[in-house]
Image 1: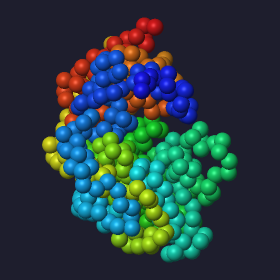
Image 2: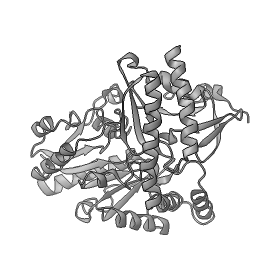
Image 3: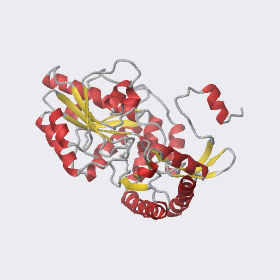
Image 4: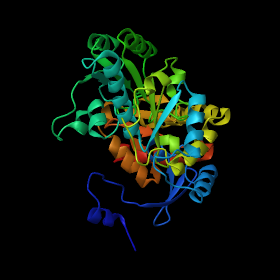
Length: 401
């Protein structure tokens, strides 16, 4: 069957507006479309393709497990899930793992666990959840309500209650909001969709202390910031603050759908048998691929290499900005970076994305004012320089249009 971009408009729900070209093959940080055009990938499937496209370790794990066992349901456990859970608990603060299929599902589980924990330990009045404006936690109705972007949650009827928001990095406002009614605080340790906003060290520390004071659980949404993205395995490790619950997805499977919620044994005990579940969560195929991805990423070579690549990205973006003066700053950490547009180009991030695609470079936006980069953690220096040359041409096209 011959399909094209036009087929999308014929058969797909119009909630997406994909590019005109259709990618068909990828290798490393390069992608080819139906016409054979080659693109450099600075988008990484929105911080998912942590080892690029078709990494041999992931292809090998997928092929091997694909010939063994795909799915069982959670009536049974399986070896890849147990190995992956053990590696995650060995590498983090956590003692228990729950597997899901996505970041939203992992966050849904975290929020349900926090509510159940508070109910059983402190009573039904302790049910408020605090999150942060411009935060993003997924597209289920619960997670999109907790996320602090009304554009994503409005227009679907009454929202889940007892969800409060305040500004990120505003400790004073947060202190006024938190109370004995607060059961959990959910935050990204590096805001992604909201514009690539790094947390102030005092803010993160203060949030942790106030959670402890009010017996509220601190949930870190590391769906985008986790699995090596910031140069640590998880971003909390570079902030010297440990959450009570951590969620992870995106890069965890290197491109294969999987998510996980990590927590302590004491907190996990409140999700007793039957209180939550997932048909596909923790299936052998996903866990085998994720185990391979984790084995490659969680090495000094890859994690240290993230910092080197970040420096090169910042250097080359700086050179582009010296010529064209379009960015006010480059935000973020590791290989989750955002080039924030200055006042002259405010609201035009999508123009830069479209221009980049035309120059055969795949990148992202984070809101209307930030061009976002979330490439493979092992993208080569040659691919970075090639991609930045294409991005410079895109910037020139926008500036000179």
